[in-house]
Every structure is written in structure tokens, then in C-alpha cells.
Length: 284
Ligand code: NAD
Image (cartoon, rainbow, N blue to C red):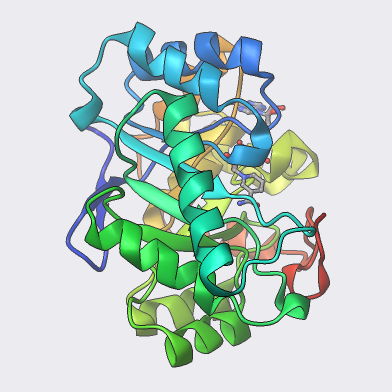
């Protein structure tokens, strides 16, 4: 949708700053949610192999009837704890996982492929990244990035590989604004993408300070939070399966948070995550 701004990634690719996330949407509901989102005007969709809804996501995209090249499609490599990603076998496994995702999505390329979690306790992820670089060079995905990486993991990646990730998708919302990591990303040309941008619809949306700002602008709290993401230069991928909320979350143009609003939003930061700290977290 023309009112949604884009971010230019470090390889020149434009990515919509507002997209639609489908975590926890069952596969059989994903097609309706994604179709509603694309029909409402979303042009970026974020899924992952572990969400087990790539089939429904792909179906929803096709049902919406928007040409594939007008959409920005992201999925993520699941780092199964049981899998050995090292050596030639690891590289082949990444390529197989990628092909399986494309198959399920019913598309022949991705816009963005992400390593879902770094799992630093399992050593280097350089081998996975080299396979990602191959996918990029072969035109199978238009950009490659990571998710849940901290400065230490990004630094390790810079030291062992040659392509700087286009994106790092991390937990980020007014309660957990990630200033330091955002500054680090900016230094290295990495776009910051916020997961759980609405704080999963929990305490954040009940913040009295946000209600006040919403009333001032004649908007909802969710719209104020998403507007905040856009104004601080972050990519946000809110999730909803409720058609009215899907549309509400896209309708964030036409008003501007001022310095006073931004200061009040900054005051709500708690420094507490909703999800796990990726540095010590080992998914299986
Ligand atoms: P979110 O912050 O987008 O919140 C979604 C919830 O907020 C909904 O389930 C609903 O309860 C509520 N909500 C949505 N719109 C609302 C509105 N207008 N008014 C009131 N309540 C509303 O949470 P999320 O789903 O955790 O994150 C968004 C996306 O980020 C996911 O769907 C997924 O694509 C991605 N994600 C990625 C990771 C990762 O590890 N990379 C982790 C979590 C989420």
C-alpha cells in the first residue's frame, strides 16, 4: 500500500516497513488471515518453518490474487537442536530446508530468508550462513538475514563470513526498545525488524500513558505503538487474525507522534522481555 513506507536494505532491496506476522496462526486459519491482510493492503508477510503454516500462508497469498513480485515474503530456517549443521552435510541440510519452505509456500523464490535463532552454545553458525550466501548468489532469495542475534553473535558472523545480514529480527516494543542493538545495527547497515511489536497484545496495550496519546490523536493504542515503530525507523510485523484489527494495524499513516509523545512512550520502557534471552536460549 502506497502509504506504507519502505526501508532500503543494505543490498538495495526495498522492504515494506509494516508487514503481517503469522506466528501461532494454525495452518488451516493462515490462508484466511493472510488473504485478508493482503486484500487490506499489506505487502509483506512474515512466517517461519516452525510456525507450521507455510502452506496456509502461501495459499492465502495466491487467493488474494496480488502478483507475487508485489509481495515481500519472509520465512526462517529452524535450527533444530538435533541437527548437525557443520560441513557439507550441514550446508546440504540448509538447502533442503529452504527448498521445503519454497515448496510449502508454493513460490519459487523468497524475499528474505532468516536464521531463526543463533543458539551460540552450539558453536559457529558460519556454515549455515555460507549456505545462505549461496542461496542469495543464486537468486533463490533476494536478501538474507538473521533473527534473535545479539552484538556478540553478529560480530562472530562478521568475522567468519562476507555478507552482512540485511536484517536482524528481534523482540522490540516500547517496553523493550533495544536502543543499544539498534545503534549497533545502524553502525553496520543492518535493518532492525521488531517481533512482537505490540508486546503480544498484553500489558503494553494497557499502558495509561499510551491511552492518553491515543486519545490525543484520535487513534487506538495499537496504532500509536505501530506509528512509534515507523518513526524510530524499525520494521514492524504485527499479528492478528481479526479482520478489523488487521486493517486497524495497517492504518497508521495520517498522524505523527511529536517529541512529547515520543518522550512519554520512552518512559514506559521496563527493560523486560516477553520472550527468552537468545544468548542463553537453546531451542530444540
Ligand atoms: P504482536 O506484538 O504482533 O501481538 C499480537 C497480538 O496482539 C494478537 O494476537 C492480539 O492478541 C493482539 N492484537 C493485535 N492487534 C491488535 C489491536 N489492533 N488491538 C488490540 N490487540 C491487538 O505479537 P507476535 O505475534 O508475537 O509478533 C508478531 C510477529 O512477529 C509474529 O506473528 C511473527 O511473525 C514474528 N515473531 C518472530 C519471532 C522470532 O523469534 N523471530 C518471535 C515472535 C514473533
